[in-house]
Image 1 (cartoon, rainbow, N blue to C red):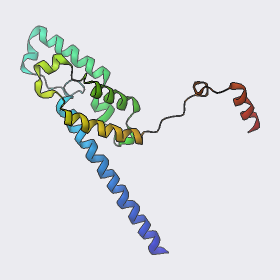
Image 2 (cartoon, rainbow, N blue to C red):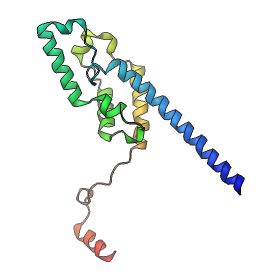
Image 3 (cartoon, helix red, strand yellow):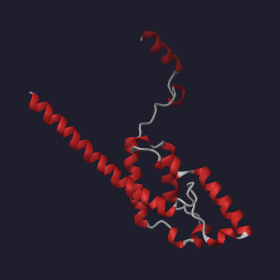
Image 4 (cartoon, rainbow, N blue to C red):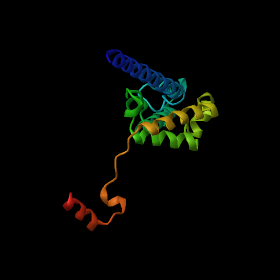
Length: 161
């Protein structure tokens, strides 16, 4: 019996390790893409180009960076989260939306930084990871009213139980 318990414990550790490595692999690939392509506007680690020092351009770039951070700060909402299952659902939905629609990076940014456009292969890698995340995130049960149930039956059920 003792060997059986030890074997089961070892098996659980191995399986957990494999899941963790798989999670890290997909996430690591996605994070690498985000760091290369998105961090200038969606983090506090903006690397400004040389022309950002020019008076009018500086204000335009700073406004874009501020706007980008207000929509999504990758450092705070993604990279600081230790486990995939703890990534907020709204972040997953936002990322999936901008990746599938191709709205990020914006056209005016791509015009000046053509190396920052996300390739089809990169999109697929990110979307695959986001699909994995959807299975990990537990959604709360909606409020009673939003289920379209008969309130009188709900009250009767509460009285009975």
